[in-house]
Length: 250
Length: 352
Ligand SMILES: Cc1ncc(C[n+]2csc(CCOP(=O)(O)OP(=O)(O)O)c2C)c(N)n1
Ligand code: SF4
Image (cartoon, each protein chain N blue to C red):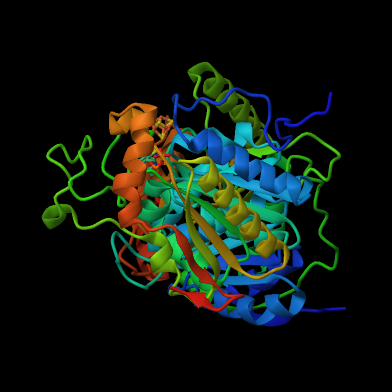
């Protein structure tokens, strides 16, 4: 019988620790597939963040480095400058990338550091139990915004792709989602491009992925997909924000 | 043939780093170490290396972490306020067993303090260069030549034991001009089979990590590291004895203050007081054995520092039965030989 589907060799056999219905797992899968499909597995280092995906170094079947909270772009820079022909990607949550690691991501982008960034935006701090993130929606209830995010006191959600796309060092910035099969396909295409850019030495590429956190959103997995579509997507429109090749800058 | 060249301390450090086979520098400007950044930015791009002016000391030390993980020799440099920011990365390097060199050309603190020289970061360097149970190698040279020499030793031992190393200088040593000679041997950098430089399909993936969720696993890991620390303490402490054989008054000083102390000792000898000095070159490991031996026949012991008294605590720990005096200036003030001579004279007739 013909094999129609096989688990990617880009992931190890360790069972993922993510909560049921969490889309971190889907993102791991498409990132690993992309690395393998481009033939990069043997020369890639994954940089894991601090956040729910801290154990990503156990799941990606390739060299991996665990970074301090928010510092993954700096760590990736160190690896890339040491080994410019190797491939390096960071995998970061929104607390990691858009709060504590804001300086590191902005400057890696601004330098045009030739790395790939996988940015998982689930609008909350997952690992620490659901606190407000820079990306938390106005009015969204979290452990530290119990009355809903009050923009008067806590400010507004940060749109990372829009922000970074103004920087000349950015070769590619696209926002995708992993809520439906067609969207997962699009997400994988964006990830493939972000890695291919690195192979072609085009500079900094980021794929922002809208992701769910059923546990801390207090929703079922299915409801979470609905929340992502109805609440997150209008604030965080999907699409290509920068593609230096095509001269796109939205 | 004498191949000595006259060099400024900071530039000599930078050249030594390059000659030790380190072509990747991650820094952020701060006085009084800017000559290191300037020198590196001039030389490294021409050598096919990396000079990267990071967005902060935090970013710079994490770049060092990444470059070290990739298996190459790398360095970051700063001065006191910047070193406080680097403590995060130093702790992660210790936790992940990564080698690398951190240069601290100290200035006075706390806070923004002063750009004048100081030795007030002794505690930070030797006791808590980051959170957690950890140690780093700490070298405190006192001449431009010795700054060059310890750069090589620091890289070699850092690679050998997978423990980060710090070169602890100060504004005086960094700015001083002295003749130096560079060793003409090629650096002997060991293989790093643990590095995350790509599996090349030849090995299982390597993981660089400091996270251990099971308490007993982390305990085992830390204990294993402390066995290595023990080996370093047993074999790699360094100190210089200056006229200690017959010394009645033994001074203990390191770095810039040991240079001033030496002049005070010479003046004391001219006045018939037998003074001498034990000068730690490594601050961790602290040269306890050398100190015990030097202190054996001395009647009095005086520690001199450019701080309110930090190393003196280690001197007292090493000599628990002895009365150890302290003299220090702080805030960027350099003690004069005359001031120290007064202290020696006061102790000169001291009884054991
Ligand atoms: C310096 C530091 N500060 C705080 C923490 C605690 N901490 C761990 S994970 C995390 C938030 C991660 O949230 P996010 O990046 O959004 O990732 P997610 O867990 O949602 O995937 C925080 C604050 C830490 N480990 N280190
Ligand atoms: S806490 Fe949220 S982000 Fe973390 S694994 Fe669970 S569902 Fe996913």
